[in-house]
Image 1 (cartoon, helix red, strand yellow):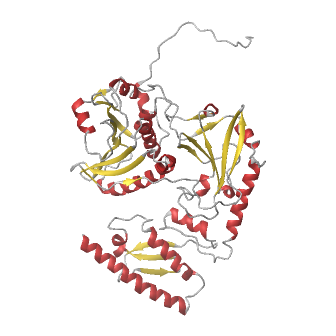
Image 2 (cartoon, helix red, strand yellow):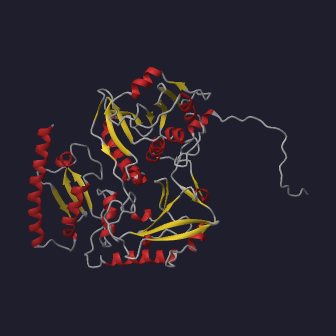
Image 3 (cartoon, rainbow, N blue to C red):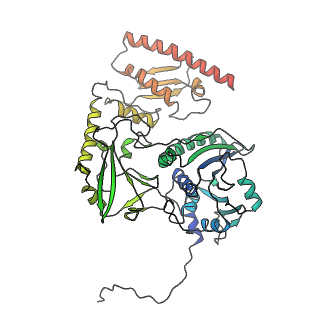
Amino acid sequence: MSVWADQVPTAGVIELPPDVRSLDSIGRNHSLESALADIVDNSIDAGATEVLVRLVTSAGALRALCVVDNGKGMSPEIIDTAMTLGGRRDYGHQDLGRFGLGLKAASFSQAGCLTVLSKAEGASAVGRRWHQSADRHTFACDIVDESFADRQLRRDWRISESAGTGTVVRWDDVHAFPTNPDLADEVISRTVSSLQAHLGLMFHRLLTDGRAKVMIDVEDGDTGMAGPRTVLQPIDPFAYPVSGRPEWPKDLIAEINGTKVTLQCHIWPGRSTDRRFRLPGGAESWQGLYFYRNGRLLHAGGWEGVHAPDRRLQLARVAIDITGDVAGLFTMNAEKTRVGVGPDFAHAVAAARSADGVAIADYLQAAQDAYTRSQQRTRSRAKVMPPGRGIDPKVRREIEEELPLLHEDELQIRWMQFAGDDFFDIDRDAGTIWLNQAYRKAVNGGRRGGLNDAPLIKSLLFLLAEQIFHGAHLGPRDKDNLEMWQAILTAAAQVEKSNREERS
């Protein structure tokens, strides 16, 4: 029987270059939002003070996406390194990049073609292009014509110039862009909204302190005209107006392998409707640890072994800054969307203490108590029917969190063709509020609506008319209210429809 060997003998070396198909598989853990955050990281690392994310349309359809910055740009040698798979430069201590994969992984997770155009101080404009294709057999990268690169960099991107330097990252054949022009407006609206939420959260410190300004707009590629732009606003997940417990926040100090790590422990006020608390997916999923590096939020939520997720802990958020002193204790994935902790992390956090001797267990208990007290305030509110089909899931979650629910069938709000002009109809047997299809486009601003469209109107109707479905019969007061609501809402809907027809 062979005994264990501490050393593995070798008999030479062999070159094993990567398969060219590796371009097709990198960055698969990226979403559109996280991929663009990675590109924006590169711009900030390059010293950009302004970054523009631009969606480009042609013939009504979405065609391309560009990220433009006024950073220091790249020389021919540097752009070749940037476009090399695994190409690594000398990273500064403030740089967010580390792996030499970010640009390529982020881009090819979302697009079939990546073009980078750049100009550094004292250098000519330069461009490189990678194009994914089934017949690619080499890592040959296209060299973009210098005059084209120069013209594109000189376009009026409406961002501040910085000594004539900067970079344009262009994505063509974007996977998320529909080929049907009729869907373009909906996709643009959804994309801009999701980017506002994600980038506003991940870069909130940099946006707040003025280190960077990030904007989004849409260009009509046929005319070269860009529409109004959205300037991203910071979404600070710790910016509560008043603490959920007066004695918090507190800093707890944990020691991991002889290095001290500060845990900034916060408690949000209960039942907050602030968008910085009600983040996408619901507040419950955002409890836990928030890791920052150089002002950039890398990891948002989750307890990493410190505690199991618990709805009673949804007010608890802990900020941890990964500075140069503690960077070796944590690992960051290539997509810069998650921070890994070592096996000793949870034990070190359990032993952490504040200056006045408070432990992490005390903090978690305080957060649970704050949540429990906030829920007691709803006991005096009347129970409502559960919201059902036709009501946007975000609105449904908000209703379910704010109001106690009856154990009854759901209340639906749907559209249908009416014989008359009434705006709505009550079907108590079916548990449905029907809306007149004739007013649908007017209510939706001229757009075709989906099942969960018109969230504002439907929410108001739910709050207004939900009690009509209680009891076996409609009383005289209920009937009188229905007639009043019908008269006012129908008149308002007719005005909206008439205004819409005049504008069109």
